[in-house]
Image (cartoon, rainbow, N blue to C red; front, top):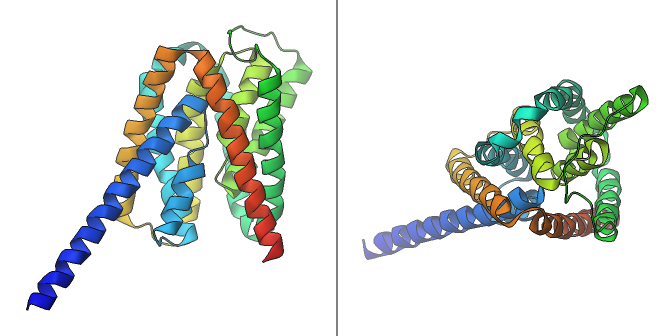
Length: 271
């Protein structure tokens, strides 16, 4: 009897420790992601795998949780979205088919090449952001000609494919694309990324991934709470501290995501 009670107690304590750990990791990673405009998967996804969640279940859970991040960030920054609804529709109309296509063909594509490609791009973005001292610090409204509009939509479709295929870094790509194309500042661009990529792209990807295997509901609930509160808190901090903090966070997260993806790619090639 004593053995059973002891075993039960240890099991409860272990489960409670696991739940608390997942919540704090989710909260911290999504707070940082809300400030930088992406990169929640850098901490959240590996943590789920380390806690014993199978990869595809962890990926689907992460995707669903980042929907809560998008909602939390969008609620805090909704005023920044009012003048960019037209751009949001373009990102959804041309990006969602890319997400669906990417999720559909991921089983036919070697992941190590995707990791390698996106890892290199993320590192280059970090150096570019560092080199351009004024990047994203002021907001404007660039007038686009037909060529620039078509190029933007093509890039959105291609990033959508990457979003449907792998988990890390695509929010960062959309953020920097909005800044370079439309002359947005970081706060405005990240607000739009939250709404489009964080909510709609990730929800679509999560639906496709969840068909591969069931998502553990108790972990998902903890992740959603952590992601929502982290997203809201991070968006609040970004409003208080402004674009300089966001730019520094963006550069750091791009570098860390890039290194993480390169390590994944190298490991997959070697093993």
